[in-house]
Image (cartoon, rainbow, N blue to C red; front, side, top):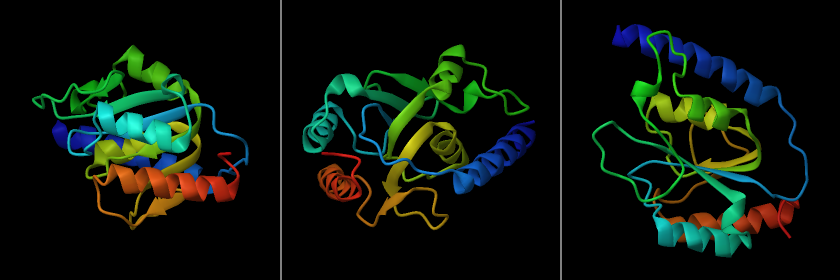
Length: 171
């Protein structure tokens, strides 16, 4: 049963990856940001404030999505929380709250997870964002891949700011 669920999510992830590869990025100012994180991302309230300040954006512009294992006690940031249990055997999301989040359009996705598992990869691709930033990943699933140590939020924020300013997504 568990294998069936993972196979179905894998198929959905491959479809999302193909859509990612075909999309066009629009150069427009960032207004709405999705943040994907997990308990090992080192993203806590203070680090989130640092990211917001570095990017010159307001906290109201950020929406947080956390993926965690069912038994993890990570509740540092408010927002949507998901685990493997939100998927049915056939890979459908059972949570109306998560379904609504995935319908939203964001200007920017900041992925702090490093995509260490299939579920994080799925959510990273399922979140609709014009531009995506994350740690270096061999599958090239971001528009901007940062080759920095996972969890180095300060460097992540400053490098993101530098490149998004050059591209014209930040002022």
